[in-house]
Image 1 (spheres, rainbow, N blue to C red):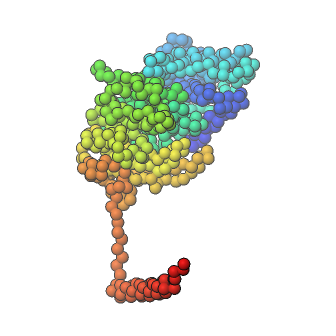
Image 2 (cartoon, rainbow, N blue to C red):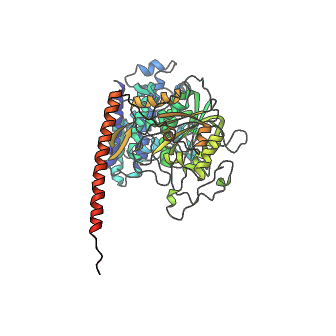
Length: 548
């Protein structure tokens, strides 16, 4: 079975889980995404365990691999043998025989199966709490699994609901795709979360970053020629983790550690799944749920207030009402928020530009040799006053700006705001800045009645190649110096630096004389017509008489 077929079967599983939720009255319910994500993760962990134990370099491998049903062979092992086996598969979850999907399938005829199902999920989470738990900014653990059948209000239907879920999980196996990592699961993850990001996320809007934008950001940040190891990567508004996954994939999952924080419980749940799917389990202890601006969850190792990172990526919320938080003492840190904090407007408090605070925070947590890529509203590029100007002055005067890419309109299907990506390099060695206007690129498509622009593969390569090679292309890109930017009053809009082209056409002397004769003739005709009008006007004026 090829990758496309696996993706289709995986998407069919997700659709089947959604359909089951719908059949039991949970479609659109706040619990629906939790149920689908948890059941999907349960399936993944079950198959991951089977994959690892059947390829482990142990005496038990052939016993499991050659069995008609490896789950039965695993169950037949002694407890001491299973504990010994677990030591040889550090990448696998801790799995007792009763935690396996096959075990649940064999118990479906028992009374109270819903309780059995929930107890199994919760116990599996508890057995793996040290490996898969994440924390809130208050340092509370967020459980891996919760009881989910209780979300069905009709008690008499809970057993059938649990059975329906288990029946969906035994239709195929993930084992054949585990070596494909990011390329496979990035596509699956986008499909999995598609229905849960359509309407934003309330106060902290959970706008899903398109895979193409994430790819551009990661590939422009990471120098493929550089040998990277023990790299720290951070996203203070991580959402579901698309940007971090792309960055980790570009660096190498085994060569970097992820740090993240997000206000949303929903997004953090999705982020945990994303990390597990992409072999970044070692970074789960660094996932924090909480407000990054007032309760940052990553303290420095040597007593510093905050950890600093090699790479930071972010697609922060742009405008939200944070009037209740703005008085918090955290915002009084003038080193961190050097340009200030937006004032609370009398009206439209939800227009407070919170991205300006995130941008300052990112500069603060970035190492002196660090690199960052941040999505901002395109209006930031030409802002001539206030906090945006102060931020631009800082990154230009310090020589930190590496480049800007203005994206096509509607590249985010659920927001009409035009966006650009600014690239920070605190160790910018050559002092040049490349400005790219990619606003005319992309293909228009319709998704859920929304017009969206999608960057095609060759356009992604065009942006990346132009940026890395610092090419100047008419009406597309311009390489400028920091002095030139200062002379333009800190504008970062590529269009303001493009040369005005005047096209000249070579013609012969005969053509020149012919055209001049034609112009003279037309002018003489116009002058003659003008004289006739003058004469008529004077005649009409002469006819006017005063009447008492």
